[in-house]
Length: 219
Image (cartoon, rainbow, N blue to C red; front, side, top):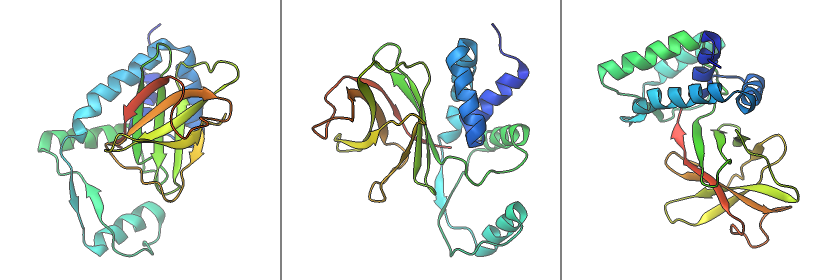
């Protein structure tokens, strides 16, 4: 079955990270039932992947940040100067990103995830979509086609440059994990999901098969 134009637009918002929490949960439920919609999500991921190629850190003047906050939220920011990650893309890529944002969002959503990852299946039938909101330190991991066997748990792991997996916890029914304040999640790190006994790994390292893994990218 082909997806409708509305569903394709929803898939784009899902990939960009513009959906609200309730809409994202509802859309994830659709993905479990409609393979064509999953393919639409894959297609948008491929189309937008090139937009992450060139990024530089920049510190804009304070008045720029205040003006943006006033336009979005009706009042100036109360926080101090911060370093933003701004895209300085080639003209064509910047225009393409602007077009996507104009089409699929009437306003910026302050609670949108800052990092996303597609955890591709290592074991057949297990794939996940992950998003991380740095402000709330909230990681959402959603099974796309995975059925957890009885008497087991999905456990989520963060893998840094040293290759050592750090447990972020057992995946609860709602798919949301509050990340500890001493854990730093950033672009380029790997998320993985393993199948563990109920309650999680007893050793602090994966004991069951690693089902899927993916790299975190900026939204």
